[in-house]
Length: 393
Ligand SMILES: *Cc1c(COP(=O)(O)O)cnc(C)c1O
Image (tube, rainbow, N blue to C red; front, side):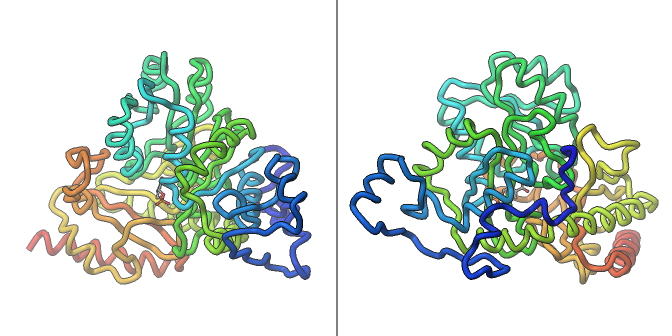
């Protein structure tokens, strides 16, 4: 965490707009408009000449969206941030701002599946190559980096939760002149601030913890002004994945409880992961918080992890017995969720469907929400016992 910047202090979220918004309303207004008019020809021409920075059209600049961007920049310790209609829009617009045909990307393995599919379809068609590496193996990252234009990482990675020394990997990329981009959706800026560790750009699916209530799909990227301006200049307006004012407003609301939500996700998920690890029917729990120590720069853990059952557990019986944990993708909201690995491996309609993302058929991904920890355990434990005896009979 940046010295002198306490993310658990609500003041850390306050940006200038907050103090000046209309009627001193405690909640900022939603500026739900597509366009902004000018009072005179002179004002219009001054704006077009770039002498005045004011909203013109919501695909470019909208005050409610800007408020979210400024809050997120503050949380990540960034000079600037840019919001998008989804996490995938943030990923595609960011990466495409720094690579062109013939370039190569180095990425950590077991990425978020749709990022992997973007790289394996569109990027492949554009002759942008991707080399995948185990991010825990710094020698392998170093060996893959010469000549790469961009280094793309998640830490921990999706599903299997391989955690990396983000600062060390960012430094390798920098030494080789590659822009480093990290998807920080899992840890959120509350537990990991990659820019302070030496990464160039940090992005999020704001659909997860930033929004926090499973009612919005959005994305955001933050970093130095020069890099954000480059994304804002071409990819943002012309690929056009802009965030709606109402969705930005929902995230602004969500951000106000981000620190306390993350504390609770951390405590409940660690408790449940520890109890799962003690069960005979559980082979492995993939949760970075169960290791002896967290990687440098990761200051806490969130509610998403996975575990692998031993052979012979009936995962279907387990899933159907649960009541509080719902079967569902996405994560980061108040509700607890599971995704069985064998269901993901059935996802045949997707491009590159042979790729397994490191997922075992005996694994289950859990998102531990904000329900009571004991109530969640009272849901899980009998479901595991039922699944074990269903398999035995
Ligand atoms: C969900 C997710 C995304 C994609 O975000 P969308 O908002 O769904 O487009 C990207 N990265 C990670 C790690 C995610 O979990």
